[in-house]
Image (cartoon, rainbow, N blue to C red):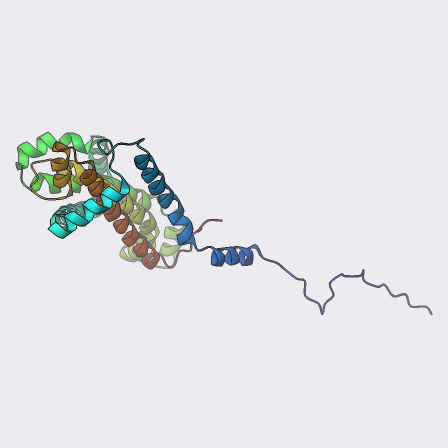
Length: 286
């Protein structure tokens, strides 16, 4: 009796030899360790500043048109030493903070009522959809007539700019909750309040945080216009005074302040997202 034996091809994996696997994630991690992400994020801003300095140094841009980065930095130091920069930042932050609190509270209440209840949608959503198409900046004359030229119109303007985008995102987040999850919750015997707490609100949270980020940007934009209403302090006030004397360096300092404050606010919301949405892994880019 002859027993035939078959030999595996040379190099073929056997049961004892595991198949070698090279993952793309390992290579990506090695590249990220070699070149940190924060380094890539700094390349484009630094390149823009260098280009700006070159254009001003070569005379392509005059100081009357746009002050150089070196001049702007020197002006910022002078304003800080005089205390004007700190006072402007505090005044603007107080206005944005007050308007943001009012706008967030109003948006959450209206969006929750409109999103959870059909009658609430019938009563609230239609007026909100109409009002959100009205340019908020166009309401400045009416706000001055209604509230005068003090702090109230500035805060109301910021609150309106915050309310509408946040309302839209929260409302959309509630209405886009998977109906299958709600049915599953009912099957498990969860009551209405438990469904809202454990299913609907967590599912709507990503949309709400996106709306909050957008609302913060709208708040700073509204502040720029709001501080043109007879302001006696704030970043916008410094910009208006600089415009009267054609001080482009001061104007750029104020614009940079707006950008930095908006960036810090967005960074805070991103940290909040990582904390609140820790249960929800998201795609971080290839």
